[in-house]
Amino acid sequence: MPDSPQASSPLQVLQQVFGYPAFRGQQQAIIERVSKGHDALVLMPTGGGKSLCYQIPAIVRQRQGLGSSIVVSPLVALMHDQVCALQEAGVAAAYLNSTLDFEQARQVEQDLLAGRLTMLYVAPERLTTARFLELLQRLYQQRQLALFAIDEAHCVSQWGHDFRPEYRQLDILSQQFPGVPRIALTATADHLTRQDIAERLQLEQAESFVSSFDRPNIRYTIVEKRDALAQLKRFIEDEHEGDAGVVYCLSRKRVDEVAEALVRAGVDALPYHAGMDASLRQANQDRFLREEGVVMVATIAFGMGIDKPDVRFVAHLDLPRNIESYYQETGRAGRDGLPSHAWMAYGLQDVVNQRRMIDDSPAEERFKQVQTGKLDALLALAEAIDCRRVRLLAYFGEPSQPCGNCDNCLNPPDVWDATELARKLLSTVYRLQEKSGFGFGAGQVMDVLRGRDTDKVKQYGHDTLSTFGLARGASEAELRPLLRQLIATGALLVDASRFNTLHLTPMARPILRGEQTVLLRAPVTPSARRRASGTRSAGSRLGVLAAQLDDAGRQRFDALKRWRADTAREHGVPAYMIFHDSVLAAIAEASPDTLAALNGISGVGEAKLERYGRDVLQQLELA
Ligand code: ADP
Ligand code: ZN
Image 1 (cartoon, rainbow, N blue to C red):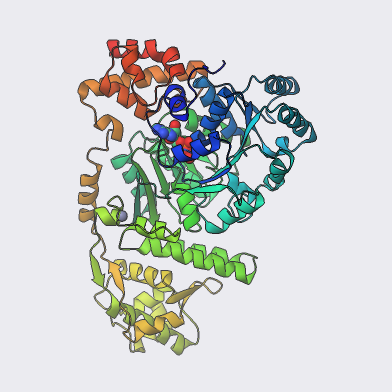
Image 2: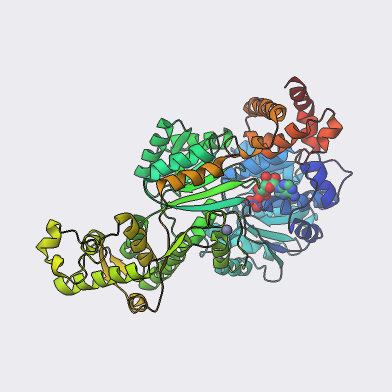
């Protein structure tokens, strides 16, 4: 379908094609620059709205007679979704990748040469073939090459998390097609990667647009791990019943166990990991994308290229590798800008496991040191008693104020001064080592401190130590968080190669001397925990969107969702591609009775109005 010729300013395209009333954040500035033919480097968090930053210039320039735009994208699934969504919005878009057969690929090439495409998505390895470059040359000679967009631009950098060697060859774009504007986009917040992108893609001269990396709609919660599975079940039940979500686990075995347990608890959960049969894995991913309310339990093999907008929560049952990974993984929640949740359960064993993984890896010493430093930063985030978001953004070099939307802001933890107990614990570790000539694990340390004369205590004569029974009244529940924090902050070292024995480091010294205080989050009693989660879950139980509607509105919302599910199945596209939840909720609330009124709702563009408008009005009448 040719794009309608009349509207060609960026704002008009935004409103008519995409149905949105206004630009977000830096979109306008970026789109105006690129539409005029300038280069740009765009750093924007996930869900920030990067796609429009090249899609609108592509449409604008096409309408100005400047030809087609080429979008470089690394993943087949992502390409397919984007093209599908563009076609739904009435834009002439296509892709060229390995899923097409020879005939189909030929047809796309012909469409491109004939000027029938506004946007063509290609994989980098396809773009750099002699055949495709020759095709581009022909367009270039005719001045019909409007723009190059390089999506997921961090793939060009080996510092990034998804290095793709083919991206390295993209420097030919500036060499072979000088004068064609280029825009590179990424959600990577890491400074080193940013620099690398500009250099590798020869975009040093390009204007760069750096957005805030805050994701204000994501609420961060980190809980102390007790019975992780039970905690997860309660979290989903209390706060995310019927919502789509992702649960990350470290191992394949754990993924299978957790998925099974959730299914038994009545959650529509599916497993995903690299050890599964490829077709089953693909089927699970498709169900997650296409259906509503599916919870994907996965290893970190899952996620890249998943741009499902309505993922309401991301839960970590195990600690991620570092803050970058945590930010990436949690960032998959709430792309649609609606309230979402990043939830993590964190415990002593996580710290020990992660340290061991670094120690056991065959990497060079320097690399291990960097990894250890990064892990420490993540542990500090997990142990924090102040705003999580402030810490997270500070890690990416962005100053901010307490957010009001993380666990610590919403329920400031009670803090107690654990300095005395920490000194007793550290001296016990020291005495044990001194007496026996080798270190002991957490269990023995706690038994000695608490004055328990177990067989092992008697066997080593540890009941004669001066620290024996120094903290007779302390419970294990009090001592574990203390141990965890001492390990997290580096005062204690766990030697994974020798039965996880504990050892003092130089950082223990200021604590032992009483020069440094140790503040700890007060242990939460089970009844207090129930109270807290009870107040929080009110209002979110029925889903954030429906909760804002009155009874009649909710009925309309449900009717629209049923209609959308049927239509999605008929068209073979994910439901969110027809209308997002937020759009359906806005329609249900406004309950328009004419096409003109429906047109005024954010997210309803011209093509969708034409295609679905009457059906939607009919649903509203019947509901
Ligand atoms: P990113 O690629 O940066 O992760 P997307 O381009 O997928 O983000 O956009 C995230 C969501 O925000 C999409 O659902 C998109 O339709 C929506 N969106 C983008 N720009 C706007 C806007 N100006 N107004 C309303 N919604 C927008
Ligand atoms: Zn906060």
